[in-house]
Image (cartoon, rainbow, N blue to C red; front, side):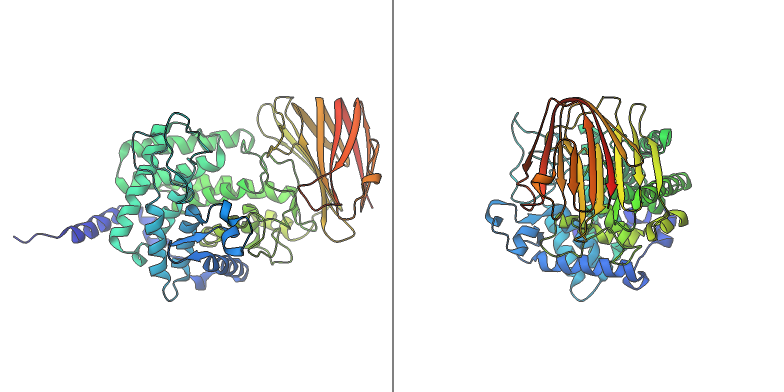
Length: 519
């Protein structure tokens, strides 16, 4: 009787594991470059060109933007990115040009080496963010600082897409190890116990990955638990048709990704239907808050990395770029120096899954639908209001004084954007505050907070002497302020371009009323 060698056994196991994929996935999935429309192809090609330039042949990983753009601080920062290298592998197999399969396999081998495999540790199953990152160790290990548990979901879902879409373009022994890595990510997340269904962007990806692993492994217990998890994520969303992480230009993009995974790869019609319904609702919300002339989504933002989508890469902007031409999309023309550039490297995910907004939402993204107010309930305590005007967008979040904005926060409770005479976007937002309520009534912003409130403002051509306690005379906008603050101060900000960026402080206040008048 003959026996198979270990390499052959690995290939047989990989084939058997693939055959238990949902039949609808096997029958329907394989996105090739020729199937992409013009906008999707353009942003995919731009993304791939930048990742090609960032590729480090010796490390088999993509370099950070600082490393491949010649940033002077490169020596003090990470050189390589693990998560983004898995995105690049997906793009390589979609493009499938000369040498792309080999490079994708090399990248995936390098990524797999960075998974933590000690099952006794809380970080089991996640991945180093960079190979230069030291192993977490000791009682002083801090989540987010010493390791990122979310790399389980980010890299795991990339592996899922690779295995569904392009398993036949990779060696069988490599795909078998990718399946095993997904299982470690699921086990690690279950043991860690830190994730909750309201943590929307990660919860959506986890649901997709867990459902995939349960189906692939024929694991009835995982199947039951993953189904319950996804149902709970859906139940929380449908309370107010909103996610707890509300209106984030970056994380809405991840939400769209997770939902597209559900509707494309879900193992049951119920999962696929739930994903499609939630995705349509989210796109409608984006359409209501979006101003196509200003090329920005109005606030408030529960988590934001910027105030102008024309100048930094936001993941939601990448989705919208596949639907809109470059001169209409809320996305800069990127180069190696563009802020938050690695968010662009999710483009392979986006173009493979495809943006699927309802017709009404797409119409609102393509042309201005007229001035309108928006009001949304987020949770029992929190609600959002916005004004989408001809020349300005305003946003506010009323938290019933349950949520503060500490220094360095991503939470932007009160926001405004307009286009200055220079053609660039001017903006301001509350960057620091105690527990705060912000409400928008057309062109009026009402702020309630018991303490000191700090605004950050940026507008090309703005001058320090034109900003007083009761009036800001800004390029393209006048803001009239009435408040009960004890004192007022303004100083030039050092974290933006000198001369047009300011930090404005209203000390020991309870009420502020800001009335904006575009010019």
